[in-house]
Length: 151
Image (cartoon, rainbow, N blue to C red; front, top):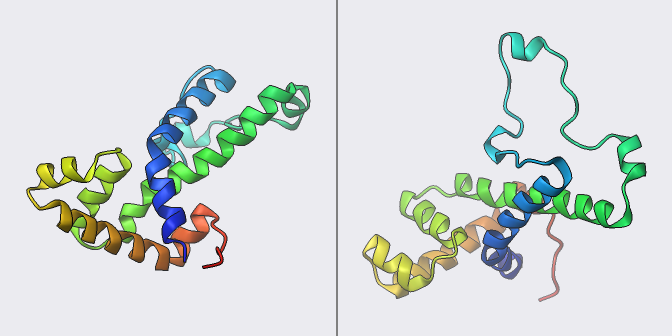
């Protein structure tokens, strides 16, 4: 039921990732590596006060309409990109993880088949298996904030 939505998001991943970087540069003047999101700090770094990485209420009120729209889009895309990057953790087979990573990198079936040394048909079957597995993982579906589609 979520397979089509997940497949569309995987195809959209490359441009969404670039858009996250672009919006972060516009709003914050820099891009924050996603691997540092939610990373625990130790020692003196952990004890030092930190400002929020997001915008404060006062800053949000001062934003113009375009900035506000960009900020909301950034938050939405960050959530989606993060969920798609975490999705490989829900797959058990290493070959499936590699094929999934190739898919989110925007590689075609032909490129993936050549890269791994299998047929395009095997890539298609594995893709269907990956989409089926991901659509059945409620934690992943919740991360993506997908809604049930009729059909």
